[in-house]
Each structure stands twice: as structure tokens, then as C-alpha cells.
Image 1 (cartoon, rainbow, N blue to C red):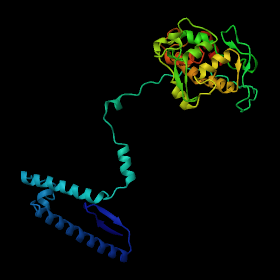
Image 2: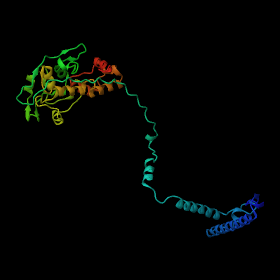
Image 3: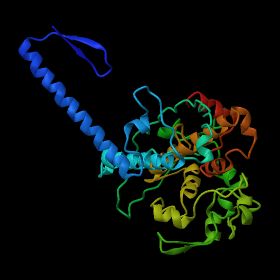
Image 4: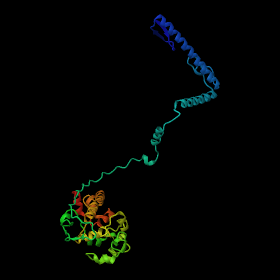
Amino acid sequence: MATLADENGLLVNSQFSEGEEGEDLNELEDYEKQRIANIKQRDTLLASLGLSNSSNQIFGSGSGSRTKLNSNEIRRKKELKIKEAAFKKQFNEPTRRSGRIAAKEVEYKPLVDDDDLTPPPTLKPQPLIPKGKPISLAPGPSYSDEEDEETFKSAPRPTRGDDGRLIFEGRWKGVFTPNLTPEEMFKGGAFGGGFFADTYSNILKTPLNSIDDLHSLPFTLSNSEELLINQSPDGENNRWKVRAGQSLQEWEKAGWIWAEDPRGWAQWYTRFWDGRRCRDDDRQVRRWLKVAGSTGRFKRALLKKLMQSGGKSSIADEDIGAVLRQCLWQWAYELNEKEFDKAMNGD
């Protein structure tokens, strides 16, 4: 067994055969030679930078003491450290960077806007509105497309139920349930007061005369010039004192106008209420269901607003959902307290 001295002068035991011991001693000698050569190379580099080329002057003698450096040597030492750091950075960082990494750095770049430091607002839970019951329309009579065939039939005017809804007999019963008659709708204020005003029909390619339409109505209003044939429609003439809806020209572009009722839905409804039955009834009733029926989009939007504002008690505040209320009014429907209760039961 051979006893060797390590770099700190401590004794260590090494178990080798005699041949192995000689080879390892030679390796140690080569290592020592290389270490001395590295020290000389370092001293040469220090000397080139204007620092002392003696390792003992910088790190002290074997006793462990340090030699005090003057101001120039301290400054040069700092410069050396800066150059050494730059050298390491140059060879340690990649020279090319992928687009994916660059994109991630942009994506995750921290923001300093004040808004980003503000906690997100607490979201209020949405009020629960029961789902409306889907209503299916029973099949009705078929009509021929021949122009010379009579397409109009008569039926009795509707009655009114205890809940205020109109009851149309036949397959419309329990399906088409407005709660305003045409007279109530126009008397309360609809379409800015100008639904039957003089205008031009792009469908018929002819003018529509207000006096002719006024005489054909199944009801009369004392202030018809303001509420029916007003040439300057105004939201102040409406039930809820707001403008709502689109113009006849926009209805025509949307494809909603049937030539037999060139003024639109309210003209059809007035004639349907008066007992006329025609080929356009199914389409118009389905349109009403999509607006004011149990699953109608305007009705449910108004229900949501009312629920967010306090529920049933907010119905009395006419400023809440005024435009939605006016739209529904022009579809012969008012969401009153009875209708609110029905809606909360899914009707």
C-alpha cells in the first residue's frame, strides 16, 4: 500500500499493485506539470493587463496573507472582470434564436399598466330565468300559388281570457297569444305614429296612400293624424317614449314583406285580428313566436333586464328596458305582472 500526499498536504491511502503505483505516480507528475503551466499562463495574461505577474503578490504568500492592491490595480481588476463576463456571455449564449422562443418572450412580456394591477371585478351571478316551453304550430290549410285563386277566408274575432291574452280559435288557440288588440297597440303609441303614413312600396312598385289605408281599418282613433298617419314619426308618440324598430324600406330589404300586406307585420295582424285568414298566417305567427312567444328573443332579453334590476318590482320602472318594451308593444305584446309570473313558470 502506498501513501500519497494530496494538494492540501493531507495523507491519503492508495491501494495499488506495484506496477499500477508507478503508472499513477507518472500521471500525477504530468498533472502537476500542467497545473504549473496554467499558472504561468495566467500570470502572463495579468502582466499584459498591467497587473502584477506574481501569483504571490495577488493572492498572498503560502502563509495565506494578501498583498494590498493600489487604486490602479483595483480598477484594472474590475475591468478584467467585466471583460471576462462579456467573454463568457458571448460564448455561452446561442447566436441564433428561434421564432417560437421570440414569440413567447413577446407574449409573456410583463405589463405595467395600472389596469393590470387592478383585481378583476367580481362577476354577479346571472339571474335564473326558466326556459320557455317550445310551442309547435299544428298544420293548417294549404294554398295554391295561382294568382287568380281566392286565398282569403274569414274567422271570428278573438276573445280575451282572464289572463288578458287574446284567444284565437282553431289551431291558433294557445299558440298565438298576443295581449294587445291592434286598436290598443296603435292607441297606446306604436311606430312613431307613422305606420299608415304616405309612403312608397318597393314591393308593389306603387305609392301607398294613407287615407285609403285609414278608411280600411276596423277601428278609428280620434287622434289618427298623430298616431297613425304622421308624416314625421317621433319616438315621443310611442307608448314608451323611445324610438324602436326599422323603416319599411329596411323590412323590404330583409324580405319580410308580403305583397298582400305591403306595410308589414302590423297590417297583417290588424287583418288577422279582424278575421282574415290567408297563406301568410303561418309565417307571421312563427315570426311573432320568435319575438314575443315563450322562447322569444325580445321577451327573454327584457326578462333578463328586469331580473337584473330587481325582478317583478322593476316592471313599474318604465325606464328599464324601454326600447325592448316598445319593440314588444309593436308586436302586440306587453310584459306586465301577469305575463312576468307566467314567464317565471316557463310559459
